[in-house]
Image: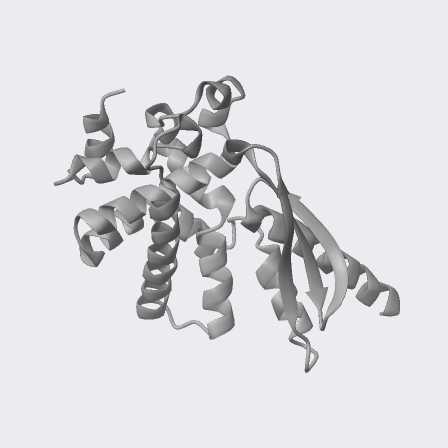
Length: 227
Protein backbone atom coordinates (compact mmCIF):
# COMPACT_ATOMS: atom_id res chain seq x y z
CA UNK A 1 0.00 0.00 0.00
CA UNK A 2 0.99 3.61 -0.54
CA UNK A 3 2.79 4.99 2.53
CA UNK A 4 1.31 8.40 1.72
CA UNK A 5 -2.12 7.06 2.69
CA UNK A 6 -0.86 6.26 6.16
CA UNK A 7 0.60 9.74 6.52
CA UNK A 8 -2.72 11.22 5.42
CA UNK A 9 -4.54 9.02 7.92
CA UNK A 10 -2.52 10.30 10.87
CA UNK A 11 -2.31 13.82 9.38
CA UNK A 12 1.47 13.89 9.65
CA UNK A 13 3.97 13.84 6.78
CA UNK A 14 7.46 12.71 7.68
CA UNK A 15 10.42 14.96 6.99
CA UNK A 16 12.68 11.91 7.03
CA UNK A 17 10.82 8.93 5.56
CA UNK A 18 13.42 6.54 6.96
CA UNK A 19 11.85 6.98 10.40
CA UNK A 20 8.51 5.77 9.06
CA UNK A 21 10.01 2.85 7.16
CA UNK A 22 11.94 1.78 10.27
CA UNK A 23 8.71 1.90 12.32
CA UNK A 24 7.05 -0.42 9.82
CA UNK A 25 9.91 -2.94 9.61
CA UNK A 26 9.40 -6.03 11.75
CA UNK A 27 12.40 -8.01 13.01
CA UNK A 28 11.33 -10.98 10.86
CA UNK A 29 12.00 -8.97 7.69
CA UNK A 30 15.73 -9.50 8.10
CA UNK A 31 16.90 -5.90 7.89
CA UNK A 32 19.63 -4.58 10.19
CA UNK A 33 17.23 -1.89 11.40
CA UNK A 34 13.79 -2.89 12.65
CA UNK A 35 11.15 -1.18 14.76
CA UNK A 36 12.10 -2.53 18.20
CA UNK A 37 14.03 0.57 19.32
CA UNK A 38 11.28 2.91 18.11
CA UNK A 39 8.74 0.69 19.88
CA UNK A 40 10.63 1.23 23.14
CA UNK A 41 10.65 4.99 22.62
CA UNK A 42 7.01 5.15 21.55
CA UNK A 43 5.90 3.21 24.63
CA UNK A 44 7.50 5.85 26.88
CA UNK A 45 6.05 8.78 24.91
CA UNK A 46 2.58 7.21 25.02
CA UNK A 47 2.67 6.78 28.79
CA UNK A 48 3.86 10.35 29.32
CA UNK A 49 1.35 11.95 26.95
CA UNK A 50 -1.64 10.03 28.32
CA UNK A 51 -0.52 10.82 31.88
CA UNK A 52 -0.34 14.50 30.98
CA UNK A 53 -3.74 14.43 29.28
CA UNK A 54 -5.47 12.86 32.28
CA UNK A 55 -3.70 15.12 34.76
CA UNK A 56 -4.57 18.35 32.94
CA UNK A 57 -8.13 17.54 31.95
CA UNK A 58 -9.61 15.61 34.87
CA UNK A 59 -9.59 15.89 38.64
CA UNK A 60 -8.69 12.29 39.33
CA UNK A 61 -6.75 10.55 42.07
CA UNK A 62 -3.36 9.00 41.41
CA UNK A 63 -4.92 5.55 41.47
CA UNK A 64 -7.66 6.52 39.02
CA UNK A 65 -5.16 8.05 36.60
CA UNK A 66 -2.92 5.00 36.84
CA UNK A 67 -5.81 2.65 36.11
CA UNK A 68 -7.11 4.72 33.18
CA UNK A 69 -3.68 5.15 31.64
CA UNK A 70 -2.99 1.43 31.86
CA UNK A 71 -6.30 0.72 30.14
CA UNK A 72 -5.66 3.24 27.36
CA UNK A 73 -2.14 2.04 26.52
CA UNK A 74 -2.71 -1.69 27.01
CA UNK A 75 -2.15 -4.20 24.22
CA UNK A 76 -5.78 -4.54 23.19
CA UNK A 77 -6.32 -0.78 23.02
CA UNK A 78 -3.21 -0.06 20.96
CA UNK A 79 -3.77 -2.99 18.60
CA UNK A 80 -7.30 -1.73 17.94
CA UNK A 81 -5.90 1.69 17.11
CA UNK A 82 -3.38 0.03 14.79
CA UNK A 83 -6.14 -1.88 13.01
CA UNK A 84 -8.08 1.33 12.39
CA UNK A 85 -4.97 2.73 10.71
CA UNK A 86 -4.52 -0.54 8.77
CA UNK A 87 -0.92 -0.70 10.01
CA UNK A 88 -0.73 -4.41 9.29
CA UNK A 89 -1.09 -3.70 5.57
CA UNK A 90 1.99 -1.46 5.59
CA UNK A 91 4.26 -3.77 7.56
CA UNK A 92 7.48 -5.22 6.18
CA UNK A 93 7.38 -8.81 7.43
CA UNK A 94 9.27 -12.00 6.76
CA UNK A 95 7.53 -14.62 4.60
CA UNK A 96 7.01 -16.94 7.55
CA UNK A 97 5.41 -14.21 9.61
CA UNK A 98 3.10 -13.26 6.75
CA UNK A 99 2.07 -16.90 6.28
CA UNK A 100 1.25 -17.28 9.98
CA UNK A 101 -1.01 -14.19 10.03
CA UNK A 102 1.47 -11.71 11.41
CA UNK A 103 -0.24 -8.73 9.81
CA UNK A 104 -3.21 -9.24 12.11
CA UNK A 105 -1.47 -10.47 15.28
CA UNK A 106 -2.31 -8.32 18.29
CA UNK A 107 1.21 -8.15 19.69
CA UNK A 108 2.71 -7.10 16.36
CA UNK A 109 0.05 -4.45 15.79
CA UNK A 110 0.53 -3.06 19.29
CA UNK A 111 4.30 -2.89 18.86
CA UNK A 112 3.98 -1.27 15.44
CA UNK A 113 1.67 1.42 16.79
CA UNK A 114 4.19 2.19 19.54
CA UNK A 115 6.98 2.28 16.94
CA UNK A 116 4.95 4.68 14.79
CA UNK A 117 4.59 7.04 17.74
CA UNK A 118 8.32 6.77 18.38
CA UNK A 119 9.00 7.57 14.73
CA UNK A 120 6.85 10.71 14.81
CA UNK A 121 8.62 11.82 17.97
CA UNK A 122 12.05 11.31 16.38
CA UNK A 123 10.97 13.09 13.19
CA UNK A 124 9.39 16.12 14.88
CA UNK A 125 8.75 16.93 18.55
CA UNK A 126 6.65 16.08 21.57
CA UNK A 127 3.84 18.52 20.74
CA UNK A 128 3.24 17.06 17.28
CA UNK A 129 3.41 13.56 18.68
CA UNK A 130 0.82 14.34 21.35
CA UNK A 131 -1.63 15.58 18.73
CA UNK A 132 -1.39 12.29 16.85
CA UNK A 133 -1.71 10.25 20.02
CA UNK A 134 -4.81 12.12 21.17
CA UNK A 135 -6.33 11.94 17.70
CA UNK A 136 -5.75 8.22 17.11
CA UNK A 137 -6.66 7.19 20.66
CA UNK A 138 -9.57 9.62 21.08
CA UNK A 139 -12.22 6.90 21.05
CA UNK A 140 -10.23 4.62 23.37
CA UNK A 141 -9.71 7.46 25.85
CA UNK A 142 -13.45 8.13 25.92
CA UNK A 143 -14.25 4.45 26.39
CA UNK A 144 -11.75 4.23 29.25
CA UNK A 145 -13.21 7.29 30.97
CA UNK A 146 -16.70 5.80 30.60
CA UNK A 147 -15.47 2.53 32.08
CA UNK A 148 -15.99 0.52 28.91
CA UNK A 149 -12.42 -0.23 27.84
CA UNK A 150 -10.29 -3.24 28.66
CA UNK A 151 -9.55 -4.76 32.05
CA UNK A 152 -6.05 -4.10 33.33
CA UNK A 153 -5.35 -6.93 35.73
CA UNK A 154 -1.93 -5.66 36.84
CA UNK A 155 -3.37 -2.38 38.09
CA UNK A 156 -6.40 -4.07 39.63
CA UNK A 157 -4.14 -6.51 41.51
CA UNK A 158 -1.87 -3.69 42.66
CA UNK A 159 -4.85 -1.79 44.06
CA UNK A 160 -6.21 -4.93 45.72
CA UNK A 161 -3.03 -5.78 47.60
CA UNK A 162 -2.42 -2.15 48.58
CA UNK A 163 -5.28 -2.61 51.00
CA UNK A 164 -2.71 -4.44 53.12
CA UNK A 165 0.55 -2.86 54.18
CA UNK A 166 4.01 -4.16 53.27
CA UNK A 167 2.84 -5.97 50.14
CA UNK A 168 5.09 -5.78 47.09
CA UNK A 169 4.60 -7.32 43.64
CA UNK A 170 7.39 -8.36 41.31
CA UNK A 171 7.17 -9.72 37.76
CA UNK A 172 10.16 -11.87 36.81
CA UNK A 173 10.88 -12.82 33.21
CA UNK A 174 11.76 -16.51 33.41
CA UNK A 175 12.48 -17.24 29.77
CA UNK A 176 11.47 -16.77 26.18
CA UNK A 177 10.88 -19.43 23.55
CA UNK A 178 10.49 -19.52 19.81
CA UNK A 179 12.12 -17.60 16.95
CA UNK A 180 12.95 -13.91 17.26
CA UNK A 181 9.93 -12.83 15.21
CA UNK A 182 7.45 -15.01 17.11
CA UNK A 183 8.61 -15.22 20.73
CA UNK A 184 6.62 -16.55 23.65
CA UNK A 185 7.31 -14.89 27.02
CA UNK A 186 7.07 -16.65 30.40
CA UNK A 187 6.96 -14.68 33.64
CA UNK A 188 6.52 -15.44 37.33
CA UNK A 189 4.57 -13.15 39.62
CA UNK A 190 5.78 -13.00 43.19
CA UNK A 191 4.33 -11.18 46.19
CA UNK A 192 6.79 -10.42 48.97
CA UNK A 193 9.24 -12.86 47.40
CA UNK A 194 6.76 -15.74 47.23
CA UNK A 195 5.94 -17.08 43.76
CA UNK A 196 2.18 -16.95 43.23
CA UNK A 197 1.52 -17.58 39.54
CA UNK A 198 3.05 -17.99 36.11
CA UNK A 199 1.98 -16.11 33.01
CA UNK A 200 2.53 -16.59 29.30
CA UNK A 201 2.01 -14.29 26.33
CA UNK A 202 3.22 -13.06 22.97
CA UNK A 203 4.76 -10.05 24.71
CA UNK A 204 6.17 -9.51 28.19
CA UNK A 205 3.18 -7.26 28.94
CA UNK A 206 0.72 -9.97 27.93
CA UNK A 207 2.50 -12.53 30.09
CA UNK A 208 2.44 -10.18 33.09
CA UNK A 209 -1.28 -9.52 32.58
CA UNK A 210 -1.92 -13.26 32.38
CA UNK A 211 -0.13 -13.87 35.69
CA UNK A 212 -1.84 -10.92 37.38
CA UNK A 213 -5.27 -12.14 36.23
CA UNK A 214 -4.66 -15.58 37.79
CA UNK A 215 -3.56 -14.14 41.13
CA UNK A 216 -6.33 -11.53 41.23
CA UNK A 217 -9.05 -14.16 40.65
CA UNK A 218 -7.56 -16.36 43.37
CA UNK A 219 -7.54 -13.50 45.86
CA UNK A 220 -11.06 -12.38 44.98
CA UNK A 221 -12.37 -15.94 45.38
CA UNK A 222 -10.56 -16.24 48.71
CA UNK A 223 -12.01 -12.94 49.90
CA UNK A 224 -15.52 -14.04 48.90
CA UNK A 225 -15.12 -17.34 50.75
CA UNK A 226 -14.03 -15.52 53.91
CA UNK A 227 -16.89 -13.05 53.50
